[in-house]
Every structure is written in C-alpha cells, then in structure tokens.
Image 1 (cartoon, rainbow, N blue to C red):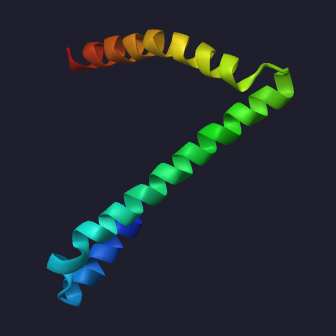
Image 2 (cartoon, one colour; image 1 turned 180 degrees about the vertical axis):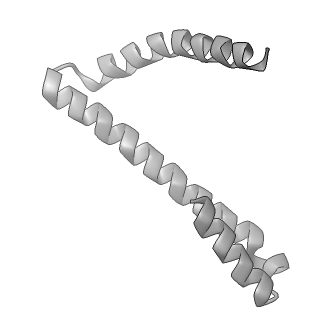
Amino acid sequence: MEAFIRETLKILRKEKLMDKLAIPVVKVYMWNLTLMMQSYYKARIMSFNEASGISEKVVERLISLSASKIYDKVTKTLDNMET
C-alpha cells in the first residue's frame, strides 16, 4: 500500500496537483486498506465457523476475551525491546 501511495503522490507532485488531491487520494487508499482488512477478518471468522461449527458471535467473544491478554504480552515485549 505504501508503494502505491508514494507513486501516486509523486505523480500528483509532478502534475502540480498535490495541494488539491493529496489528502483525498490518501483517504481513498486508507479506505481501501480498511475494507481489505475487514474482508479478511470476516472471511477468517466465517472460515472458522464453517470448520468448527462455532457461531460467529461465540468466535467474536473468544477473540475479544483473548485480545486483552495478547495486547498485554505485546506491550511487555515492546517494553523489553526498548531496554
């Protein structure tokens, strides 16, 4: 995604359209990335549901329960990297 944004901004700069279009173009790329990530997440949940028979709501709940533990581990890992 970064490469697409960078190349698009180079063209906008070359064509002297940076002031007019830079922010809208970046917003479009970010919206696209958001949709891609949401689609991947939804497909993963649906795949897990189909393979295990566990409902989507239960899968969501399991993920949310373990997410805080994972975030804590990531935070501790990052804190240890800084020292």
